[in-house]
Image (cartoon, rainbow, N blue to C red; front, side, top):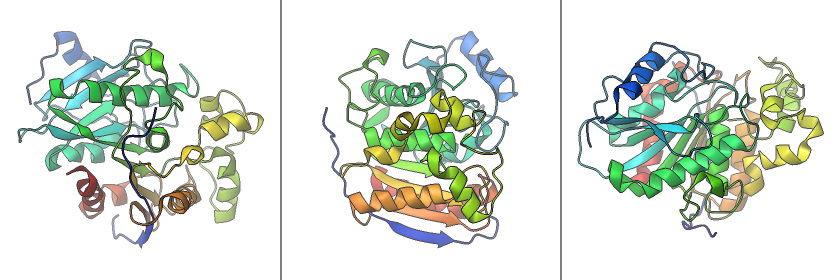
Length: 340
């Protein structure tokens, strides 16, 4: 397959210091019950709770136009997504695919870490939140395969749900940032593309990617924390108990080929989508150098204009500085530039 969208990318490095930082749902009663349980904090289908910003859930009751628990593939019960449309507007709507965090091992499609992404519903975007196979169910590349399958499902079924198939963006935080980034850099190629998940002839290209503090190169994280003088919250990445080792399926230092395949940098090419990358300088989960280096590597291949890196001074792994209106305005200004 060939990439379908040709974009020239570059780097605008901005270091920001922030003071504080259409149809009504037609689902059956089972879907509605499951959604209500998720909003109250119950595990969805047995999935471990939690996300990049904690274990709370979003109250989605105010969104009246929605389609819940739609299967985008049939290999796992985890392969489901929710589609939310703005309460106002006619569509077809540009799409934000929201990818939750949770160290590749927990979280779900109504996790509290997705709250900022759901702001898109107030700004003219449809939001599609996606569950994917977690590391306790299946190791790499299952989660990436799932995200790419979800993109194909949305594109193929766009007219059914009043979505614009030509304007799809990915937005992920933490582990979701990795998945958004790697789906972005492999879009429209045969890399990490599981045809058994359906719609094999449909493009999984996207227009834009928002990466919030995603881990990129697992093998460099320990040395980067040491360089910064930050004690990593989860201990050494190069340990058998680390989330990254669990995701890869073995100790990362003993699986360097797999780690390289899980690194979005491996697949950078000149026709990748636009990127907006954001990271807190005091992040103890994922070192800030992960985003700095990723942005620089994108710039070296893609040129100057379409990769923006924002470092939030003093911010950690998510939190108020990311979710402040002034910061979200920056994210949506980027998205509006390419999606509207």
